[in-house]
Amino acid sequence: MTGAANYRDVIAEVCTTIRNTLPHPVNLNAEGAAAIAMAYGEVFAEHFLPWMRHADQSAVSTTAKEATGDNIRCEERDDHPGMLHAFVAPIAAAATPDAKRWAEATIRTVQPTIARLTELSQIAPCGIHLMALLENTSVDFIAWMYPGIVNKFADANQTYLDVHGVADQAHADAFVSAFEAERGRVGWRNEIEETTALTIRLLTDIFTAHRHVPSVSKVA
Ligand SMILES: [Fe+2]
Image 1: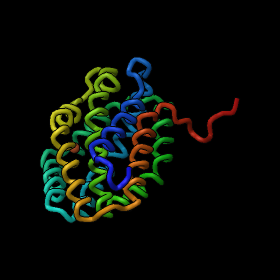
Image 2: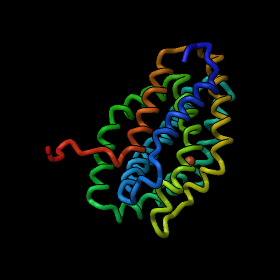
Image 3: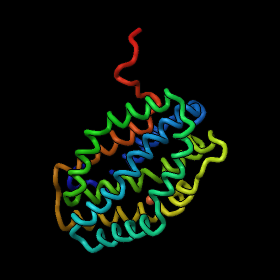
Image 4: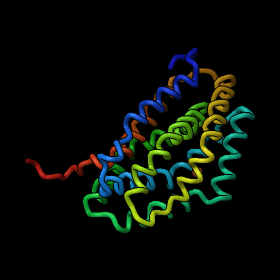
């Protein structure tokens, strides 16, 4: 992305990249789906709200502050981390040893990405950019989680998906406006492109968790 690039085009390109990364639901068995759900749950339950708070604290524009403020209130009032836990915990409890190993390998793999994104989330306008990327890509990956994950588990708790599927297009649009307001105040920084690349890497690693082979795997 250059300083003059249309932000909606940048976001659309990242969304396409993530859509193409999501495994075809038919080719993903329950074991692989469980690995993805566990990796996703661990990363998002632990980091999403702190990143949103960093974005809120680093934001300089009123438009961005309103977007982050609304989102934080909604996350806390409706207990989104609790909904995510209710979605993932039963899947994790029934997960096979392989599924657990793939999820653990993924969590280890993404640690440096998460550490850097945590730093970037505290720098305007990168915190808002990170939120815009996650909110916009989530429109696709939350929809994917029905055939990709929940339909593979009887009695799965899909409240987390139902809530985010309904709300997220509005949130996604709000964060595009928020980023444009931040850019108007802060200007261009090279860390914006780094934030884009690391967000793509994080989501790609999570949604290919079923292909993460632990480093101590046997050699043929
Ligand atoms: Fe949420």
